[in-house]
Image (cartoon, rainbow, N blue to C red; front, side):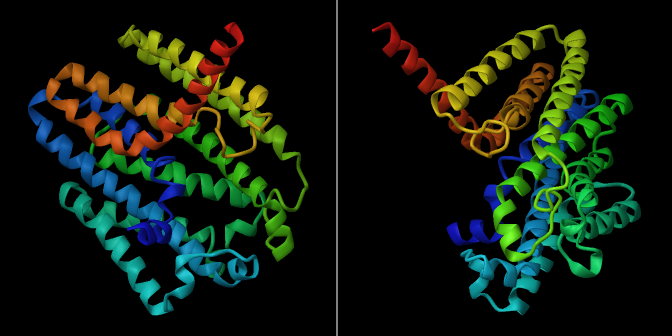
Length: 332
């Protein structure tokens, strides 16, 4: 299982992309789902989880496949190096079928679903595949394409299952787009030296723009957009205000530990990405709790989210533990 996880690169998407998308699905369900349709909601949730998971797995597998020679030259060690190319191609076909089949059964407009799915997978491949422009090496266009393909486009498929409020969904798509830009900028910043050494030209490795300022601007934009979304929720559920304040305290503690105690780069590393736990732990958990208020049968959704969010939460809570321990030591 460990080799399969490495092959699919689940560490890059399972707890950092999937939970937020499920949170958006639950947000849509919150405005639509009557209690008597609980069994269907669970089926839709599982189908959508598999759909986005297999799409993200495909995107990373095809990226590794097209970068085989580059990764070998860079001295990376990947499971794919030992596999024959026909087997890799066959595995990608299985990934696509496994992800698409369950949702195909559930959706009503199957032709539109299949057409958009083809576009989704082409967009996922276009970041890496040379014959599809390889946006990875197209500077700013690469950032935009990757954010749309991996963050925004998969959310559109929620509409096949749960018609969401248009205004709120547009806000979430914009929020997700900016978040995607920030993540790919961080990723390219981390890989910058390797990319320059191996001749891979990315937006950051070409050094044309001060990427730290862009990352900071994206973060501030996300905070503003998320504040608007939470404000809308507060008008319907006043208890959300307590959640928002609690999260602000939590994130502040994490930032203090990373910057002051560890003297690390909080902004441009994956050590403790700002807002990561809001997207991938707190927001989906909040949506699940609000949905459970409509019918206790939806408490099972929290159980489904637990394995996806546990790793991220443990990582961030470790920073809180360090903070508490340091405060106690100072008192003593």
